Structure formats: C-alpha cells, structure tokens
Image (cartoon, rainbow, N blue to C red; front, side, top):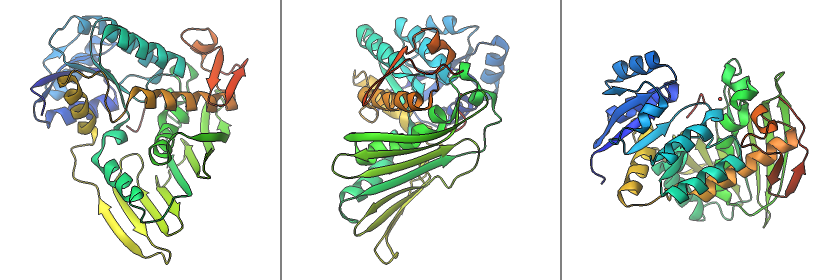
Length: 355
C-alpha cells in the first residue's frame, strides 16, 4: 500500500467533481489543490469539497511541490497542452480519456514524459477495475469455447452538450463514448487486426454523432461496436462462442457478468464488488506505480493508449472528421497514420459526460 499522497485536480467539471468526492472517501489520499481557468470557480470547487488550495492558474499549480499526482479533467482538446505543462514541470499525471485528440499528440506527450522521467497514465477507468480480471478469467477459462465474435455498444442522449458538438473542443461521440467499445474489444480480443470498417453519421458541425465499427481479427474473430450521443443504449458487451456466450452489463462501468449455455440457461453469474465510484481504482494504481518508481501503469500501459488513439485516428480518417487545430498543423495530423496505411489530404471538417 502506498504512503499518504496528495492529489491536485485540473478542471472543475462533472468528472473533476466525481474524482474529488471519491478521494474524500479513500485512505492515504487527500485532494490538496484544484486549478481552473477561472479563479472564482476554483475557489468554489475547493470550498465545496474541502480542498485546501485553490490555485489562481494552472501555472501556479505547477510550483506547488506538495503534489504527488495531478488528475486532468479538462476537455479533450486541452489534454495535450495541460499534460505538456505538467510534464515540463516534473508533475506526475493521470489524464482523462481520451488521452489526447490524436495519436501524434499522444506520441509527443509520451516521448516528453520519458525524457523528463515523469509518470503518465490515461484514466480509462474500466482498465483498472477488478471486475475486468473476473471477466477475462471467465473468458480464458474456455467455458464458452474459443470465442468467435463480440458486440459492444454505448449510447447516451447527450448531443445537446456544446463540448460534444464543437470541433474546436475535439467533440463527437468517438472520443467520448466510442473509446469504450474500442477498449472493450482490445481487452477481450487483442490487437491482431486484419481490417476495420465503419459507418458514421455526422452532426451539422462536422463531428461524429453515431457510428458502427466492424473489426476483423486474424484467426477469424470479429467485433461489432456501436456508439451514439443521440440516444440511450443498453451498454452491453457480449462475447459469443460455440458453447455459449458471456454477457457483460455496462461496458462503461462493469456491473455484472453472466455466462449462458447453448440452451440459454445461466451457467455462471458474478456481480461487481462494491466501490466508491470506480475512480478509486485508477488513483490507487497510479499511486502504487509512483511509489515503486514506475513511469506507467501495467493496467493501462502507454502502448495500449497509443494503439487506441491510432484506431480512433483511422476511424476519423474514414469519416473525414478533422479538428480545426489539426488543420492548422498545431500538434495535429496533416497525414493521419492509420493501422492499414496512410490517409493523405484528409477532408477538412470542422468533449466527457461519462467517465
């Protein structure tokens, strides 16, 4: 178990609020300070959650040597700059998903972290949950035989939120919601992909609203993934095999796993353990890694973060979704490097409710 640690929070939105509330209930951890682009909002947040320090700026946060880890909960478009500021000042970072807006940004951040010897991790919370070990153990047990296909979906009616439709904020369903089915598929079926096809519906602002993604793997497996910000889904993940299938409730925060046989009868069922919010697992993993002198978490290694970012780059290339800062060449992608080649001259087109 790690010794007493102090956390700083960058951002004061919904996810920052959940994290602050979580930390209050954890042992050996305290939220020491909070930073916002608004000094007033930072002070309000600090007062609400009993946080000692409300920084007047992100830069003031950097000179506080009491922080063991900074949790970044700003819009996707800001992650690159926020992490760069932290790393250049020697601060360990846990950044909300999506890690960055694109793979080029992610590669630069990870290279900088390695150069500076700073810990960095992506807060893809399902990767840190103990329930994931349970699910993978059941799958690997062979109870349904060799799996052949999986489906996963995630949808919420959240299109009215400006950050989700604003290209300048790296809006769209993919970075906010689609990242979960993609991670689910990667965790269950790995990375030996032969091809990835997709279909997308765009918003009037040019970002993705709904998408369906089909991934074909070497060896004959297939994953069919769907996400939308235009409607509510059942959030299920299902893995199919010749001897039955495994149903996971809520791929956004695993609540249960149930195994069915070929007659659709339940063979096995397990519920997730009680948790504070689920955020505690990623915090504990990061602090334990830092305590050991490690620079990444085994639960969400840098190569997995980069792999998912490249997948999302490829999907956006298929849809012609390019963020304004990418068109300007500002740590963006004039050529999107994809898993199956390069897409040149991407079409010029002009974000985090769930964790």
